[in-house]
Amino acid sequence: MYRRWPEIFLDAPHQLLPGKPLTVWLLAKDADRFPVRVRSVRFRLWDTWGQTVNQAFEPEARFEANLQHLAFPLPVDGFRGELRIDGEIHVEDRRGRRRIIRNHNYPGIAPTPLEVNLLDAPLPYPSGWRAGELHCHSEFTSDHVEFGAPLALMQQAADAVGLDFVLCTDHSYDFPFWRDDYLEPRDPDENFAEYRAQAAALCAANPALPTIVAGEEISCGNALGENVHLLAFGHPEFIPGNGDGGRQGLRNRPDLSVDEVLERLGNTPSFAAHPAGHKGRMEQIVLRRGPWRAPDVVPGKSGRAVRGLQFWNGTLNTEYGEGKALWVERLLQGQRLLPIGANDAHGDFNRNVWVKAPLVALRQGRDHLFGRVRTLAPASGKDAESLKAAFQGPECVCTDGPFAGLSLENGSLRIAAESTRDFGALTTVTVLGAARGEGAERVAATCDISSGGGEGALRIEERIPLPFARGYVRLEVATARGRRALTSALFVE
Image 1 (tube, one colour):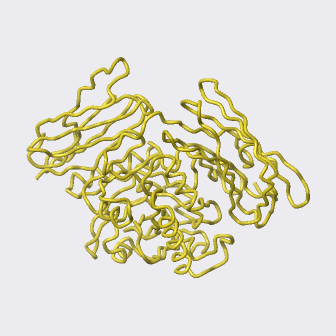
Image 2 (cartoon, one colour; image 1 turned 60 degrees about the vertical axis):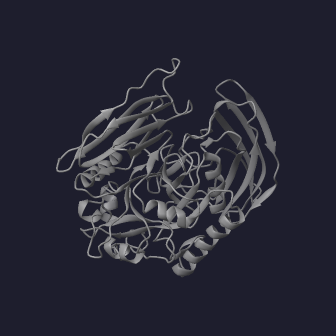
Image 3 (cartoon, one colour; image 1 turned 135 degrees about the vertical axis):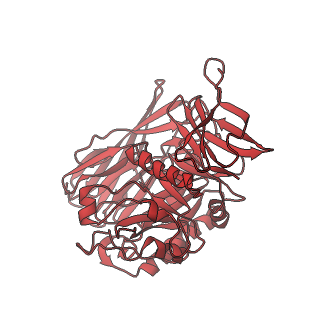
């Protein structure tokens, strides 16, 4: 895959709220090694209704930094539904060789256009609920196979797609190295402090924009001594975790155990990242990675445990099912873990590109897009401290579109669900749960979805008797367009 060119690609938010401007970014990675001049960029925009617009820019910009970008505002007036964007990037290297790049220059994968879903309605979330991306990577993640986006672009993309906050979770094993030379050591505490300072400066300069919380994805040891990943919500000091960073050869044992990391974090909320992941043989052998298991999520010697499980990781695959099964298993045992939905996006605003076979092949998809799956929590504000307090509480909702709400009122359950035409009418609204002592979860109630003018119901609210005197209940919602939401468990005493 080696080319004497920087990685050059276009990116844009995967969806756009009504009234928000559309910006497409041109990014270049490793232009410090392979400088180029961007002479012009030509865009063609079209939607499913046949509306087409062409627009050209001539920035004549030199790209000479490790990670650099340009922003291009594009029109959205007159467009509806799914907007597609094709870009022609005219570049010239330092030898005067010219090249036309369509959308990206990644070898072996198709130069498919960007796709932006233009929403007709605001997101269907109640006032006081804050929506966030809880697992993503900025440019402070930079290593052999992946890198993230500039923090400022993450804040702008979050605003476009409808997030209130972003928890950046950059890899613990990347902070001990320079971003522009991932094999050159540097002071990790200094690097982490710079990261936190950048996030704080963005929040101070743009208080109306989504809050950027500087967190960490910490590699630590499970009960079998395998490397698992823990998401920490905005702690003040760097926590080391170099076991599976790939820079130490086969010296791949964890630096700290899960329990030791939790003790260091204190009251900072933390979540098990993709708990059913890391099962590939090469990951297990070379990086000593493994999944989370029940002994890893119960309180350890320190008396602390993870606050939630991030089992919804951008897509509804087998890892989602296995991670969710672990969550339900712990609920049946009375452990009050939160469900967490996020995307593990490395930039990846519009498409995600990853290494399929090291040094040989790449792959692209739309499974881990920044902000597509988000977690909501009721919070008094969107500052970092209010958000931390919210995730120390008992309530959250994971969703890729609709809202689901479950509460206890005057001895009965109040069920609320809401969607929009962008995400599809409600098709199922199901209460699940178990009485205390039962060994399996079951359907406790289903709500009647009445017709709404031939398009189905977009909002329902019902009250039902408590199905159990003691136990827990939770709510799942699905829509006609395949979107869904699920709530945290409500324990009934």
